[in-house]
Amino acid sequence: MATEYIGTGNDDGVNFGRTDDKIGFYGLATPIVKPSFTAAAVGTTASSSATLLWAWTTSTQTSAIVALANDLRAQLVALGLITT
Image: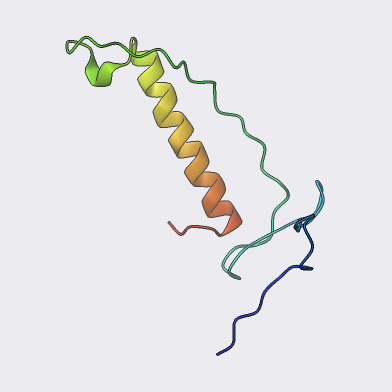
């Protein structure tokens, strides 16, 4: 089976869709509009203290990372890039 390439061969690259176009991948998902990112920002301050769980300075940061990972996963599933 031959591989098909999407592109024009120029240095400008290729875009898939415009901001309000719906896109899906692998034929596994219903095409959707560009997802918005709603997860709370995660602080980047870590502690070198071994007494803190996973080196984050607060449990709020740990919870935010879990929420961030879950949001990213849900959006990848919605696009059809990964499966559940």
